[in-house]
Image (cartoon, rainbow, N blue to C red; front, side, top):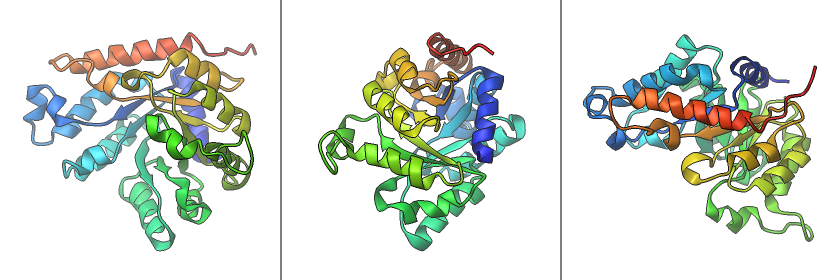
Length: 278
């Protein structure tokens, strides 16, 4: 088991939560007093983090939401703040990187050295050699896109491969479980909007942790996602919500409202989790 997975398991236990808050800033939706700040994204994130840290198993900043504002420095400050103030909460950089050779090495350096992320999302389309620069960082998590939550996922991910009934996302899950996870630091992305596919991936990969976007604004069914994706221990899931938590209010009570939304999601998830007897 990698250091990242061990940290994640400790966090599941300590917080009694499978909730991951996606830190996807949209300055246009910030309260006026935050939007007017010299570092509005960092100030917004800090307030959200302080309000929700005891309710989450991870945070997940999405890289494009920072790069679009030329706010990479505020992304870095956000990750540094989480590590300093809440060191037991892992940070997943949602960057969906995927390239070959020396470029993949640079992307891994960017995620893990420049930004200090504990895990990063990656695209497997270029194959194993494009993942190796990330996977060889045995202390970090590498979260591979498998069956994503968007409607267009079926265009490629559902294509039949090597015979009827076997889909491309099945192959990704099989490769992750049988070949890519030699260091125990591989995870998969599977959307909550497709609970049947989530259940299929769980059967393929065993107890491998799954990052599950698609609840909240995307309409994924929380109960179905938990029932389909949890392990026998009632864990194994990082259930991510962004807009539904971040923008629960656009007023001065935005952080309090975010906490309420995160707490409701945690409780909704926990209502459907297995609770093994000891």
